[in-house]
Image 1 (cartoon, rainbow, N blue to C red):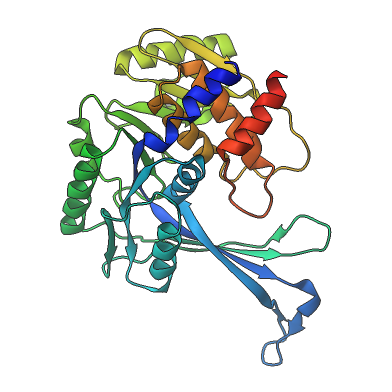
Image 2: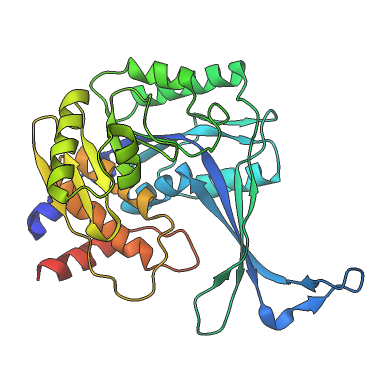
Length: 338
């Protein structure tokens, strides 16, 4: 892929409409100034004074963040938040992203807003130090009426878009957005570019584009965890042809491997590390990059190349869940091919 082909792909991004269906959460960063540490008179325990609070969409919202900075023309989040303070912050953060259409996002008193609270000690001339995270999650099943609202919202959004990203982020099945009823509804959609990812693995998902890491691929297919690249290529091609959908496997420092139903297989190594890294958000940047480029007409190898560049950009952003813009991709990609 030369510079002209790169430009041909990214120039289509503003014309695209992409739905992100899944578990949206609030990433809330508490920046702590260690110079202001005190001791509680009542308990004798340390007091961490927060001097700044940053809120941004997380979970499926991290994918949305990446689509927004890529300049996707219209982005439709499909999910829910609670009717609580965290939900207010999440909706405000989503609305602040360019191109985001909130028509299919549900605020409900039935659920709490999925929240990751990340305390960061901000040291001078050093990367932030992350303390123990504080999470808010839903531990009961998503109600049948709310599931129906989500299915209706997802199907309506899919009719309006060129591509769909499906992200299952919860630890306990049936407690989030991606329930069995939603998967069954999506299974009936035909001719739509869909990329699915789940932290609990993709077993039971309808045929769609699958994106997973090496361990998830091994659990799904039975491939050995220490498979060689050639062995992974063979297994990925077999899965792509079985599902009649693309398959992508992220391989950490070994890059990304992809296969298409037509038998095309490509492996692109990761770019070299350029200093201290933080891998949080890299997989979501890959999901956004793969979907956007494929919807823009990229080949498997072109999509992987751009997704690899996005991951490289994100892992070098410390103390935040990063994103990769077209300008950053252009800089790193053109430097790579120069």
